[in-house]
Each structure stands twice: as structure tokens, then as C-alpha cells.
Length: 138
Image 1: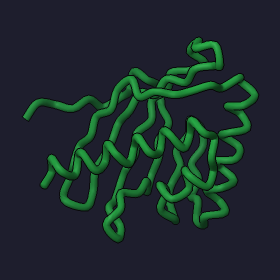
Image 2 (image 1 turned 135 degrees about the horizontal axis):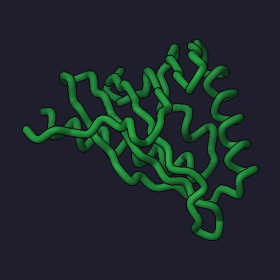
Image 3 (image 1 turned 60 degrees about the vertical axis):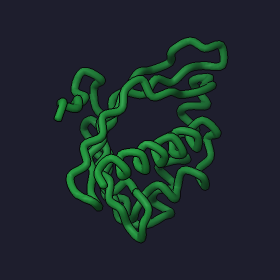
């Protein structure tokens, strides 16, 4: 079951990244559960409603647009299935401008829960790329 969960989680993460590439608040929104927690350097916030998440995503996408955002890719994804309905994921994402130059490489870790059969982000922690929690061999 863990292996199939890993595939489902990877599929969700790829859909999530595609929503970011389109800068689509409405396509990214279903990947978040509310309430959820957001941990940014120097900031801890609980996003209690879908409108709170919309506001966060809108601000994020506006910042990305101002940087000349063009695309993103997962450079690393480490999935840690904790049980059938919970997982921890640590990632390195690279964002590129329209010319293909790296704008930023950032670490993000996610606590995921399977809710009503769908994987959702219940907590997001943005961090330095050197702090990615890597998978260990079984």
C-alpha cells in the first residue's frame, strides 16, 4: 500500500506544480486542506479558510510574476509515507524565468493527509534547500 501511496502522492505533487506553473490559484487551491499551517522563515500562520489560502496563493503568484517567472521543476522529492493516510514530503523546487534562468531554488516540506481519498497539504514549511530531509533506503 505504501508504494501505491507514493505514486498517488507523486501524481498530486505533479498536479500541484502544474497549477503553480500556470499561476492558477483555482487549480492549486484543491491541493490544500483547511485549516492548514504555513511556516515561512520568521512567520507562522494558520490558514483557516479557502479564502485565506487563495490570498496566500495570489500573493505568491504575484511575486513570481514580478520576478519574470516562466516555469518550475522538482529537482528533488523525498516521500516518507507514515501510514496509509499520512505522509511527509521534503522537496527542492527550482523556478525559472521565461529565458530558462534559475530565479530561485527553494526547499519546502509538506505534511500531507489523505482526506476523502485525496492527498492534501495540511502543513507547508518553506526552508533552505540544504535542510531537505532525504529518503533513507529501506
